[in-house]
Length: 218
Image: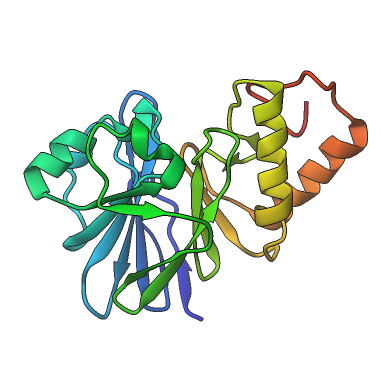
C-alpha cells in the first residue's frame, strides 16, 4: 500500500491508499486534530476540535467530527465549528453526557465509520476518561489521549490507571508493531516501540497507587 510521510507541525502528514491524513496542532495545549480525507470522494472526517479549529482551511468538505474524548482542550473549538458548519458530532456512548452539543453519532465498541471508500474502526479505550476512544484506519491509529510517545494518557486515580493499562494491553498492543500512532498531543510513534517500552515498565514493577502522568521509562 502506498504510504508517503511528511512530518510537519500542521498540514498533510501522509497519503495511505485512498486516504490523505492531515494534522492541525492548535490551542494553548497544542492539541493535534486530524483530518482523514477519502481521495475518491474528496470528503473527510475530522478527529477532535481544539481551540481555533473553526479557522482551519481543511483539505476537503467534512462529513463528520469524532471526538476521542470530551476534555476541554479537545472540545474548545467545538461550538464555533458546529455553529459555522453544522457538522454532525460523534462520541463514545459514555462521553455523550459531557458534550456541550447534542451528538448526532454515538459509538460503542468495534463500530465502523465509513467515509467514502475508507472505513475506520472505533476502539473503546477507557482510562484517561471512561469513554475515551481510538480510531484505526489501516495501519494508522488515532489514539487521542490514550497513548503518547513513552507513556499512557494522564489518569485521575489508581483504578483509572489500571483501566488504561488494560485498554492498552487488550486492545492496542495486540495490533501489529508497524501500526503508526498519531496521538492527541506530541509527535507520532508506533505500536512496536510503545509495546517494547511498556514491557520494560512492567518488568521494573510499579506501586499499586500509581496514577497521573506516567512514563514507561520512569
